Image (cartoon, rainbow, N blue to C red; front, side, top):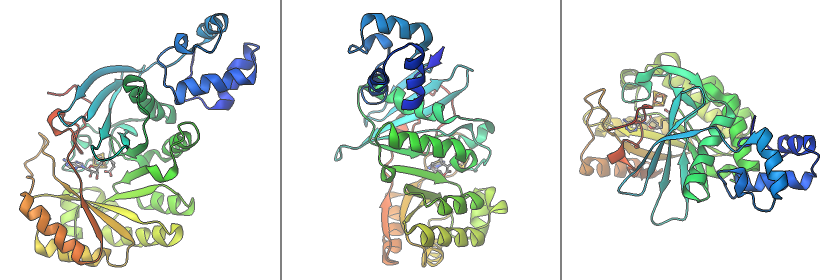
Amino acid sequence: MKVLSGLNLKEIEQITDDLGATKFRARQIHNWIYLKSVKSIDEMTDLSVKFRDELKKVAVVSEIKIKVKQVSSDGTIKYLLEYPDGECVETVLMRFDNRANLTACVSSQVGCAVNCSFCATGKRGFIRNLSYKEIVEQVLTIQRDTGLKVTNVVFMGQGEPLLNLDNVLKAMDMFNENFQIGARRLTVSTSGIIPKIKELADLDMQSTLALSLHAPNHQIRKQLMQIENKYPMAELHKALKYYTDKTGRRITIEYLLIKGLNDTLESAKQLAYYLKDIKCNINLIPYNPTAQNDYQRPSNNSIMKFKALMEHSGKKVTVRLERGADIDAACGQLSGKAGK
Ligand code: SAH
Ligand code: SF4
């Protein structure tokens, strides 16, 4: 059985060729899969019943299962999806009231090897990479379930995308060509895998690179993220500079705010200094509680103070709206479990 979701037009043409149908049929099927997001071949109503029956003998729309679906009071939807081998990942759909955007937050791996101290995914360890088809299927599942068209994709679910770069790049190409989601509407977030950041720079990636920096200096970052031992901030700085020089694109710096740890005046000063010659925007992420540690979220007052200090350094600063915390769908809360 062929799975239609995740196939490009050429691959669908191979199936229609084998069935002795025209290339136009492939185009129709492709539309049903990516733009109209049907759940079954029977819904492809501009194909004859006879042809649909033939197609059903060799292909299915998808093999992915929605294991759990949770809807947050703010409209965020979290899905726990199951692949045929039984492995599960989350994918999250976020909508923001004031915008028409529908953003899918996708997973790139099952679990994650990077094991940052603040993140629920890391606690699981690394299980396996997702193929590009499995990544693309997450967005298709959202579209099929909601009947809506996803407009933006962020690689901020489970996993470190740059440690599965081939599949992530292929998935991005698919989003581009098959979903008609422009490169500028795709964001890849990384914990800072230096050689891969350089690779993306050399590829002249047109999508947004987000870097999970989270600390103003080596000491604090080491405490928060083991990866600082392998890829320290001083080296990272060179890679970021290389990236922005080469691509001309602005990086998004993600900075987790943890009470008393990296939200002080001194931290703000050091962070501003570190970023002074890097073309970037700063996205502050107030820490979302997870069961695994006892970090705390700073008060709104200190979040706003930190923001003002960073703005003073001339950068554009935003505070990430917390989405879906009541269903454990917020950043860092994805663990592949069915939830509360
Ligand atoms: N592995 C990639 C992408 C997935 S995580 C990365 O780390 O960049 C997406 C974002 O959520 C990252 O910036 C991550 O550091 C952040 N995050 C992890 N745990 C969090 C928590 N408990 N509260 C808030 N943000 C968290
Ligand atoms: Fe992995 Fe990102 Fe979580 Fe760190 S924050 S453990 S890199 S998913």
